[in-house]
Length: 186
Image (cartoon, rainbow, N blue to C red; front, side, top):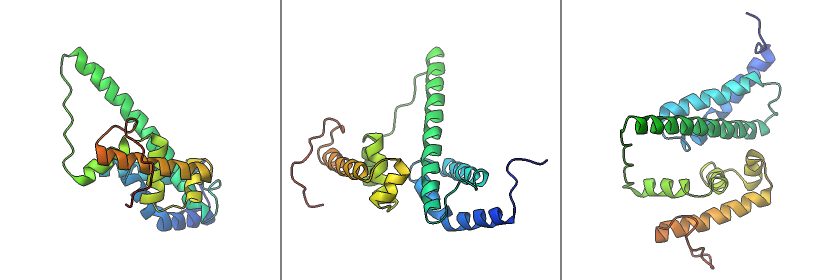
């Protein structure tokens, strides 16, 4: 069964090294963005499958990690779109059968409140904030992953922090949350 994904020993060694060096940060990146361990495992597998298939297109270290982050970001985005499509279909089917959807459970811990508040930010702002604060990427590295300028990352992170503070302080939706005029001490 010859195929387009067969690689020689050099590519296999390169992939093995990339997997060993970058599995942990990619797994953490994905795990922070999806709800279940099972989904995280599947998505990480998809990221490294893409790397295997495109090993000739993957940049050399250290840019290979950023390439993996970008691939993970797109994989998660597609997963969310797919999940949303399934959820909408399920909701339509429930309406047809006169079954009411379950009510969401209230968040009961500070951690859950923070995750909920971050999820309510503008998607680009939330992702920039996660990359810089959770994944500890520099603004320049995050700019590569997000395919935008370093300045745009800085603006997104700043805006996200302001809105997040206001949400957590006042309990307001992100668009209604007042943006502080002075930077309070964190």
